[in-house]
Length: 347
Image (cartoon, rainbow, N blue to C red; front, top):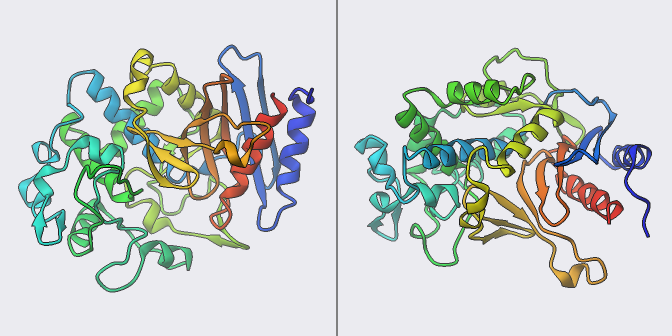
């Protein structure tokens, strides 16, 4: 029988994380629905209440808002995006092998990463550059939704929308979803997000809007600090938060605040994106095949992660929630290794 996870064991696990190459800070929060387990630990240049950049967990927030609008009958997931966006935005958005699929794109395609659209961040632009590589190199630049749409129309698509068994993780999808949220609510996505933070009492969570903001732990890429205020303040949906606020959001999501719990199976239509992740309707799954862990099968984890080692996952088989970050763009895998160690201590 393994040692049950307690505060000192979690402290040890988290302090071990910052001994690893390029990891300068780590915070992890582990909790259950009944709070019989409720432990948080921080090590390095971060504390339990430190604010940090959640990176692509912002997609989880945007998806949650879309799902809530769906349950309120303000949209349907099978609606064409052309219903909510200007014709000049949709026209020419998805040209694949000479055919225009732009009017076939649905909200579900965007939510599930089955749109086949180009990724404005990680795919090659018309000029041959990749925006993510530029940002990692310290070349900060703004990416408004107008710029995203303009650039994507000049880039190469991956596959027709909804092509069977095809999915590709594309940042473009959730930027467009932000515009759809704005169309339906009549408010910019950053305001809709702020209202959500207020409703959930996420008092230390906010959308990046101030280029001079020094309130959060600096983003790291290897041994360097990455200062990218132009990018962060341009998207209208990049978020700073804490492990505790992330826990509040995560529990709200899996307890039906946005989408009825009894219908969660509707979201679990999994497609492989990149190992070891699958993507459903607005949620990500971290899975470990039995062959890689034959003696202690790793339970599935549902939620979302970010490229900086930020995590927000629920483990249904154990009724355990884990949030936190290792705040390292170059080694996000360390966060998952830590989650696995935490889960193994709980079994």
